[in-house]
Length: 300
Image (cartoon, rainbow, N blue to C red; front, side, top):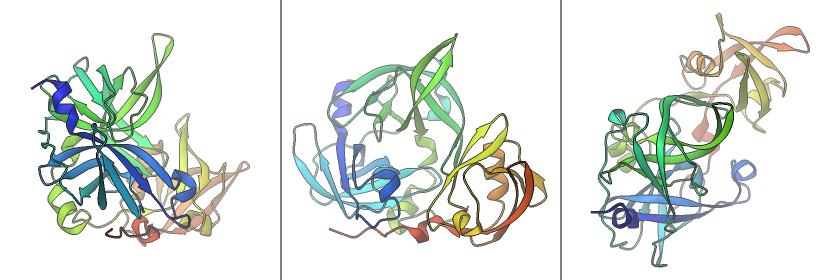
């Protein structure tokens, strides 16, 4: 079967989020992207930020048929989201590939839910640390970039699903800046899929969350902003603060900061050494389960 036929199982995803949702200011209340059918019963895999706190979800196939859906699950660790169609989609489920075996230079196709496809290559596979307290050990990066990447499906040459589009970034290569897409590999879904379907979340303890949006600069972790009402804001963490230590451990970059942070349970009070205006101070941040701040999905 050709990529063109397989990619018809990619649908457009449209979600509406309440104005008072915790993520409304950061992600908006009207969100659009894509998703791909992974079960014949209409289970759709997408990128989770599209459906977080959604009160309405609609799926549109590439013939323009619209079906109501339910936001079933969002996994904070991987970033994957699941949507269940409430009427038959009559679209076949795609087959999963093995992202671990995909190599740099491999030809791939990123397909969205309105029929746009970008033929690309894998330019690198490496660790990715996101500013929103997110880390995956080996993300897939492809070029050229797809203009509608959120929730788009990445297929290998055999038409098997390798991952879901998450971000559009820029990468410097040979002195030139190129637009690339970051893709979350499908291998991260397999161990948690049954739990997400049955329980709406993975069967593991939640990670501690601070609500600090941070960037790495010359190996230092610099706070860009804090979530209003979140643990970091309540503890007095500010924009421009440099986080140098977590408990007794010196921080060496954003990924190291997250790994040290996640050694603690959600709800733990976490001491942070902070450099502010050239002076060091300690803050004690009572962490939280991020999901406790989010509105729960409501069945339409």
